[in-house]
Length: 124
Image (cartoon, rainbow, N blue to C red; front, side, top):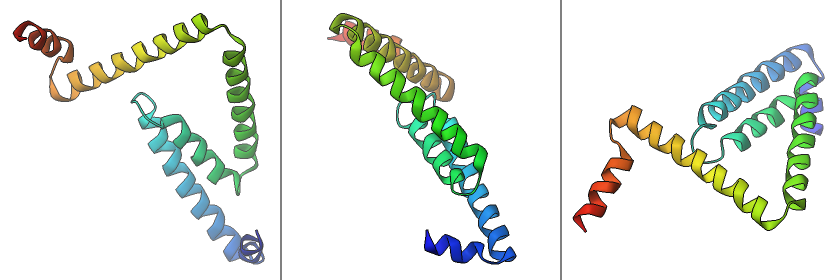
């Protein structure tokens, strides 16, 4: 943090750091939000963006702490559930992700993956 302290030691550096962190963190959060509906690390990218913003913004530190608490709470709750319940939650997550992928491909390329799969099965 000594580098950041030196940058913050004058008003120009402080303003430049705040603007740079704000732009970079905002872009990372925006990319993460766009990627949330798709399979992959959308939420992780949003949290990374919040961590970047937390370097300079107090509200981002609070939001990051709130997010960390709730993710840990959810993780511990899942861990306390029985295997069938965890399997059911995993199945629901897999169905949700499958629906998002299907809708994304359908809307983006006009391809119905379900129909393509049925046609392929019939040809076998």
